[in-house]
Image 1 (cartoon, rainbow, N blue to C red):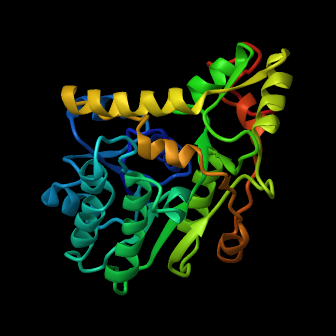
Image 2: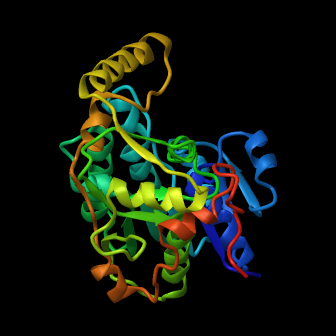
Amino acid sequence: MSKCVAITGATGFIGQRVCTLLRQRGWRVRALLRSPARAQALQACIDEPVHGGINDTAALTRLVSDAVAVVHCAGAVRGADRQAFDRVNVDGLRNLLAALGTVDTPARLLCLSSLAAREPQLSFYASSKRRGEQLLEQQAGGLEWLALRPPAVYGPGDRELLPLFKLMARGLAPLPGRADARFSMIFVDDIVAAILSWLQHERVASGVYSLHDGRRGGYDWTDVCDSVARLCRRRVRPVPIPGGVLDVSARLNSRLARWFGYAPMLTPEKLRELRHPDWVCDNDAILKVLDWQPAVQLEEGLRRTPNWCRFTTGEAPS
């Protein structure tokens, strides 16, 4: 029987891609799912659904039992307050560590963090991701673990950056931050390739590792606009959004979220992330411990991402 990898966050953008590609490579995929309906939707890419949530200790114990590795993709990226992020990004990870502590031979653990954890003072999200990393550093004990800090992630199934790319395909690029800001990016399949490399290594030094698509120094908004323009065969004009408009929108959205009980994306804290001038990272550390190299830079990644520009196929070149 093939070896079992347990997945949290299997219904998310990255988690679903992890499940799909792991199963294609012959791994037995067991996934934590909150409802039978979600299991039905993912039946093509998982072998064993475990019904429950990230704060369900019994479900987590079933999830990790006899698994050789756990890939923890579950994470809160939207929230109205600190508690909304902490429930998943800190408490959920603590629960997972506790479950791993109950089995005779605990699985290795790979946790998806975020490059935002490098600047925890910027937002509740960034702070929760950094405290999740600290939890691993302080409480993992003898468990072998790895935390990956990806920058902006895009690709098939993405719901966060895709609306921006669709606007750019129409010729307008709204800029929420500084025009001279620089940032790294990574195509989703390159993250999954790093996870596969980790699974295939018997032992990797525990720690926190950033990773990106191989473009040293990252991108600026001109680079992104130029790539979209070439793919969509039209000029893309950067349009800076006035700071005051964003500030008012973020405050209003946060207030409405508290009134109506939804999880907002645009908040004053998220704006501080968007306005940060430097989200560039490097691959130096991860290349020393994994047999992995990023394969897809921005323009090729956008070409492989469907449903945003009529000239992109969503397929890798043959």
